Image 1: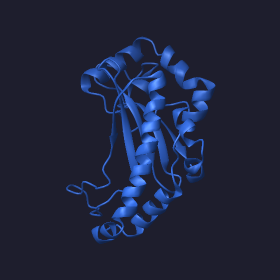
Image 2 (image 1 turned 90 degrees about the vertical axis):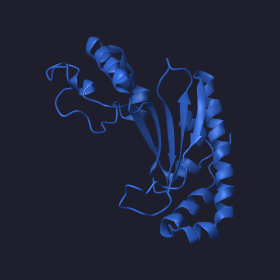
Image 3 (image 1 turned 45 degrees about the horizontal axis):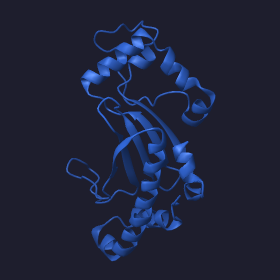
Image 4 (image 1 turned 90 degrees about the horizontal axis):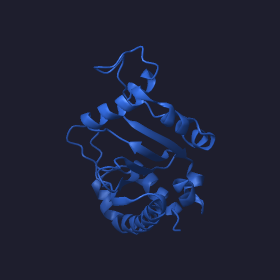
Length: 200
């Protein structure tokens, strides 16, 4: 399996200090070389995911930032990220990998920002029986890797419409996303077994 070269993080660290177009133009060849290495790694991860799942597509996010509605007008992201979408509408969800120096690299999986129809279905099924999802979240190896819970991004404050705030599963029903994440140190990212850890 391909590895993440240290040069990729060295480039991102330099970009963070020199986040402007002139610098990027001067260092375009280095950027392209690093992107080639990263894309080879992404392809290996996709192949690994396909062993137990079915991935429809791999999307590499652009390094250019969308600054139209942001106060921060720096033109470039100082991380690299990619998503892996599962095949078939019946599967839903997917995987995400973010590579960023400073111990900010993350692998994530689950259902991010589901459409209202899907969100209602998830909440209803949790209301009916949460035992299966709680069993997965609390499984020792899974809990060690992902903290034993979903990341609570902006949950509903009390209860969604049609659900009771006194429901025993309200902690899960309140969520708007059903995603777990795991962070990696820079040393882990550059280690030869990083790809295996991402797939684990």
